Length: 461
Ligand code: FAD
Ligand code: NAI
Image (cartoon, rainbow, N blue to C red; front, side):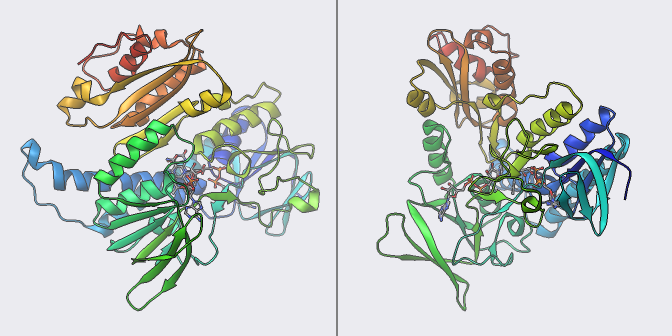
């Protein structure tokens, strides 16, 4: 039996390691238990970081191949996939080791192994028991699977396999036009795959602002991504030449077969709490398996949960916010997360970024709003860079002018969304952004101009 901990955090992803670090900073005796052999969770090992590394290098490849000549730079471009993969692996390795350093620096004990809750105050790891005043469940999520489509991580892959393919598939079929499908579909398209995306709904990117969905669809089609919308995959059959994907209309009807070399299953993720011992101690889950919480507390005293294994957007920064809040609550402080201001970014080219409510949500809720919009085509920096696709849209309350949402599509909007998130955190009005001096020429001037357009005084070119 070990000495008593203040907090045992199960899971070393953004939810787990940030909670452990904050608890360490606040002087609590804390350990972080991780079973995969490296820290950083899905995000650093097989999620955010490797996908962004490949998105970056594949974008550089495509730019060098297709756009350099028009800028007066002559090059002969050739793909070296093993080096591209190696560069991604080095980034992941450096960052996961960085987390280990951060744990040490903040006096967090790192326990390697799979944690099982055997009592409300006890966790067992590889036969050794640890007792604690608090347990934080941060066990994350795993890939959702589809009946009739058996993932082998070779030809039929999840995001994990799609981040490590050893050659560029000639034909890649993606199931699901969500975030993973479009990001990883973009990576392989840029490297030479013909990409077809089969999506159950009649549109891509569910939950995003309608205008963004339309513009993004146009943009991906221009990049020669094929969409089969309103269709579902009924099964995948291995043939001599590759894979035969059987699709049918979402409403039923005659099947249509599509050939592919590789199929990527990207239909969402589900909470991972297998063999964790939730039933042993009676921790309640909802009907989809998410750990049920109220202000991060489960139904069992002293057991908390954060990140992907609980409800809410499955995003690293959401997990991180909850992680810090829980550590602060355990330390007797006032931990809080503002779920109204959690940005979302899709790292395609152009990028897509949003924060707050969509127009559709505002209409549905009956909230009166004004909208301001500004195209990058009218922004001088975007023109100089030949990156004019897209727009910024700002939604503000019709009476108070408080910013209620922002939706952007364009090069670099992943960085611009932070400005609006900060403004919303301070409950700013659209006029506050409209009257803030922005450097010229910058693409972020489009954010200001969209805010000015809320009151119809946008002017820039
Ligand atoms: P996880 O990161 O899943 O970490 C949970 C950890 O717990 C895992 O390491 C697991 O091994 C460990 N664990 C589970 N059970 C146990 C146990 N019993 N004992 C010990 N250890 C255990 N989000 C973004 O915000 N931006 C992005 O760009 C982005 N890109 C993504 C790209 C891909 C391809 C994928 C798949 C996801 C992406 N995400 C992104 C989502 C992001 O990765 C998750 O939201 C985030 O990792 C959730 O953090 P978490 O700590 O809750 O869980
Ligand atoms: P998703 O929920 O974004 O998209 C899944 C898509 O699959 C939806 O459009 C859905 O309608 C469709 N679908 C579901 N069942 C289907 C079926 N049988 N046939 C055809 N289509 C079907 O999920 P995704 O892309 O797998 O990502 C999982 C999570 O990872 C997301 O919640 C996201 O938050 C996170 N993530 C975040 C990233 C980011 O922030 N940039 C990047 C990658 C992942």
